[in-house]
Length: 549
Image: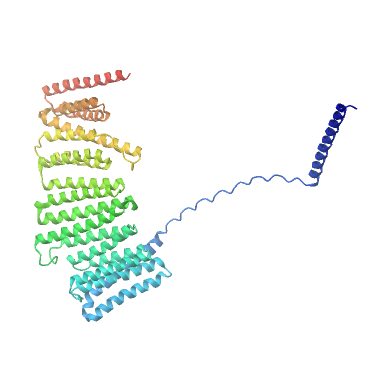
């Protein structure tokens, strides 16, 4: 056997062995499959659907009134009754008994509230806040109420009241309870209005307002400081309406300065608290604070100044406008939300417009409003403020409408008004981040349409003053022709639509009034000129259509 034959036989044996091993493996797999029962592959189980959110249970009005409102009204009534008791009956007691009994009542009410809060947290805290408010009133009465007076020094009384306000703030802050803070501070303000209101009352309410503003700055609570703002200005209203018992021994100028000084302190306190951390407060709350603070300062301050020194009213309102401009600058510096910055600017512009009637009348008043409106509207572009532009257009509309009340108003005012509306409308589009683009475009479209309407009305009145008495309708047609010319020149559809509206009114007047009343010559002139103008306008439309085609 040769070597090649041996190699070939070895290869054949290896192949037979490999075939045998493969057959044995197949046999082994078959035996294993018979011995082990087949287990079906597990089917994927669908995850159960997430439970649907439970629908909110409808508020039980009866339970809400009984638990929420009755407790608050009840504690106000209780503290009011005890305050009247202290005012009218404690004078019959000795000095030591007045002090001890007053604070015992407040301590007892506060302790009772703490005991109740262990089981009924909200109700107990309301009662506890009433005890703190009663302690404030007792301290207030020991100097201010003549029949109960124990402390003669006003400075000492204010120091004690300040200490008590600090105590209320610390307690409410540590309890993290807006209810305790609100009840205690509000009732403190309320009980201060139950007796005569003097400068001491205003100083004590200022202390309470400062305590409430701590929660606005520190905790960003809204209800407590907002109610304090309303209460502080309401107290000042009662003080301003009185002509006796206020600031004894002072002259009228001194009394006016005292009143304006308190108003300035209120405005400064609430503005500083609002702008300290403006981004941590809701937009609605910020706007409410700014608006109410403005209403209180402008309304009360103007009333006080007009009653005692009317020539100074313009200066006062002008200072208020500047103050709101400064507040807008601070809001921008503190990176406040854009809406708050624009709100301060708009309030300043409105205040400036309110100052004009105190300085001007008749035609100068209208001119001052038109100038204020156009400056405000044009300033909106530099500040990117749609609100400011709306305010500017509103002031322009007021100025244009005021011409109705001016006898023999000069026609130049209508020309100025027409130019002002045109300038504001052509000031360009505004870009802002806080208003969605669709709403911004809608607001700008409506504003520009209002400007076009104001310009059309001003032009109608301007031409109407220049036309003879019997050709009023023709004057309207001329005004419509002018609006068409402006619309075609500026390629603005709004002006052409306004012109169509004026033209429709002119045609209606022509058919209803002029055909029956106009003399023959005026009727001829009106119809001929009307026909010529309508043909010219139609020819212009035809040429524009052909160019587009």
